[in-house]
Image (cartoon, rainbow, N blue to C red; front, side, top):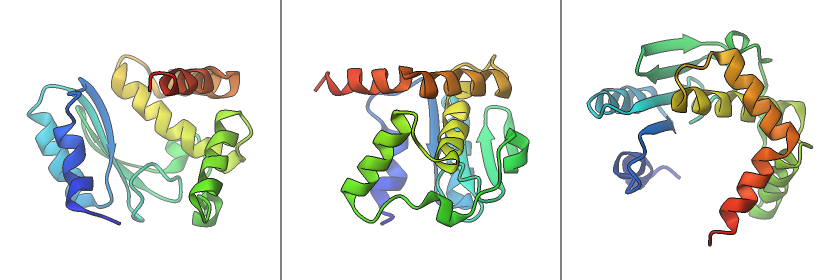
Length: 161
């Protein structure tokens, strides 16, 4: 359910991150965020899949608006397959969704799930470390996900509660 708070939240993040990747549900909002983030001096990337996803879904073309400008990309530009929306079904319940999340963190996600996670994580890493090429970022996030580092960091985050 899209609410005003979904739209406002990333812009008023009390942590005030210096690097930020944000997914949005429509192109108009992506461009507004891009304009607003340009005024902040932070490294940013705003992503919108043209078929309505608020992430790189790999189901078709997507826009990335970042410090370098606005680009229209295809899954093939990332060396990724084009997926069907049915490949990305997140589960019918919170429990099913959590199980999918755990499988992905355990390196047991489907090829489609892993491809989407790697695409989005690679862009996040490039946003945090702009000197990395797309290939370098992908290698690092793939090693982290499949080597168990991502899971270890998630567990570390949970222990902070």
